[in-house]
Amino acid sequence: MNIKSLFSCVLCLLTFSVTTWSQSTLTEHTFRLDDEAKSPSASLEDMGWLHGFWKGEGLGGQVDASWSGSVAGTMVGTFRLVKNDQIEFSEFLEISQKDGSLVLKVKHFDRELNGWEEKDKFAEFALVRLDDKTANFDGLTYTIDEEGDLRAYVAMKQKDGTIKEGDFVFQREASGDLDKPKEDAYETIAIELPDDPEAVVLTYDIEVKSRRATEEDFQPTTLFRLLANGKVLVGRNDPRATELEYTITKEEVQELLEEIVNKRQIFEITTDGIKQKFQDTGRPFFLLDAPIYRISINLGDKQHEVQVEGLISTRRFYKEVAQLQTFAKMHDKFTVMRARAALGTQNEIDELMDAVVKKFKKQYPDVEPLSLEDVESAIIDENGRLLAEFKRVDFENDRAIFAYSCTVVKYKGKTTITIMRARLG
Image (tube, rainbow, N blue to C red; front, side):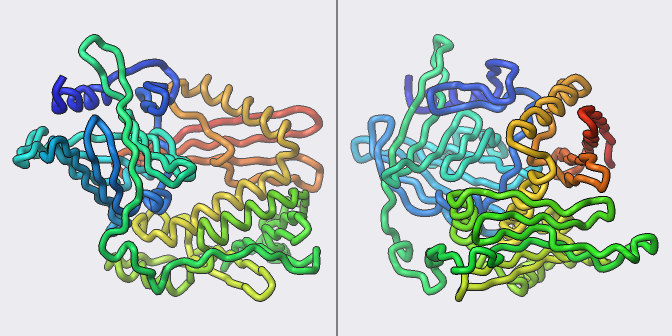
């Protein structure tokens, strides 16, 4: 089978269905997104590890690939395969935002730059799942291995109907300015906790500018505080809620701070920087009495604070602003960590989510169920009653189509779960 025929078979996999699960295994390292399944939420900042120039081997020849950083809401790349000092084929690739997730688009060219696809056509690979340094698109996987090499795996359908895995291995190469130190390169920060075990090292809070008259006597408290000793203090912004606390391990404290400080690079995110990025888009966005979301970190001599007004609205309006999307991901994480205080032990959380998923599938069998990541709030009221809310909006071509909500009430051993769907637009 020639190269063009081989890769044409890859494109067939975009319509090839295996099972009814949301994701199916195609080969050892590749997966597909099943019919009606939804790609996970993701942003281009999660693909930063792909940026660079790579050289290696695959399909019996020499290969190289180049990926730009994120600019104007896209990452663009090139790929070529060389055999016997001749180019077999090349590709132009683009990763961009779509419906709150990512999609990979590819156009193929022969050695004379004649396109394989029609002029206005391209191959499109939906995102199946995304981990720290692995991106599984539909039939195509990119991953960074323990040696720091980039590995790519492609599921290729053969003439006899079987599926074969093609693999590539790339080493990062210095190219142009890539090998020059950047003045603004991020310097990894050592996580050194304050000597005082009761010192607050991480704070997350929401400041609401106005409240209804009936809430005038209510005094909210800081929503999330992490102490150096691992104690998590969960405050309240709901008059019904009680203040809660739990403890995480020393290892969990280090992992959380490492993620926020170095992976998310919170010290590089500034309030003014995000505002400037908003202005740079040229698209004005007005907010009235919007809540202010604030994250503060204290590592002794290293302290930082950043805040965003109207996060829930701006995160969708300014998808291309990477710092804003990073801030939003931290907000999502702290929301889940706050909910953990009310939801109970891991076993209790697992049991509750199993019940939510079971009921959701019964009502909407063809829709991806709500998950713990969709939790909006979870409190214990003054009577010891658990009140939890889960919400998600599903999009199609950047247009909101359905809103799903789930209310959980747990009291004296009885759990009531109510799930609703509303059509939008």
